[in-house]
Image (cartoon, rainbow over all chains, first blue to last red; front, side, top):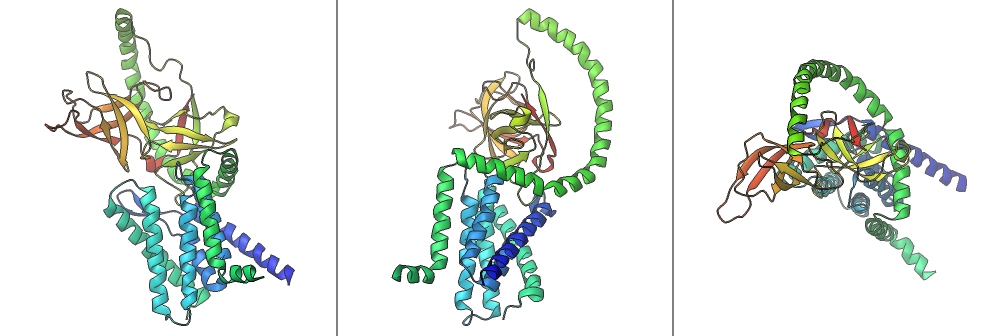
Length: 160
Length: 260
């Protein structure tokens, strides 16, 4: 039993590293002007884990992802990205509490809203000003990530 | 037993509280010894992970850059002959005015920017030089065209973090205009910023270039920072509102120089 569970951890750790590797090297999509959006594989991976595992460990994994982001990107606000990522994972885990109550559409709507909230906070930290730009980039970023999540769902998790 | 049962019941909330507390601890130990050590290790790990990104970016940009640099080289050759004459003239004038030379003891260390798209930020960039290359904290960083990019804020063994000029916590003393008025540059959004403390009586031309003043110990004088975009003089204000646009292209930074 122990070896099975430790194997599972190894598997998730390796997948996490692969996701981070792909995410780091993935080119971004130019939206308009010089505003870019990225396909957030990390967030999709966390959502998939929420639907597959429903475990508090997803929050810890999200925290680690956020911590790496913090260390690489932040100047003065160290710890903010790790907080955002773990909060997103925590909120995403709520969808499992209503597994039998919410239908597929409701679950998708909830996931989209969480994505939007995540990117709204994320871009508010990255950009200094201009709420319209923050709002529009967050929206397009959440739409692109959500589309990728829908595709992942169709092939891998198949939410009911 | 009861405690463990409760803990099991609220695992998600407990994990969330734990990670939030950890985030808070990290937030308040920004400059701690262990935080700096972890940062240094993550920089090294990140450099390894993002190496394919740098490889394909190099491939994509190298031809374009080569063409650009070749054309610039010809222009610079032509300009150089002009500047030699100016230098002689300048030296004579400086001797007459007893002024000191700027850019006297500058040595430049080239570095490669290793940030990827996902981890790119307008606050900072990671470069592939560290303490092993003689890098210290608070060294000025310029791009390949000599425009100010930012300053080194964290140094690892092989990599360092640069605070970009676009970060809203970044500020640099600058000079502008024919009368050399000193002001303070502050970033607002993306590649735009404002100059604080420019007196109303100063006439600035549109497209005038703003240079570092040399007042601070970090930035040497005469490094180009931005160009004037707009200026508004209001009756009820002592200083004029000067809007500027940064000269450096933060989105396309692949190589930079550290001024040692």
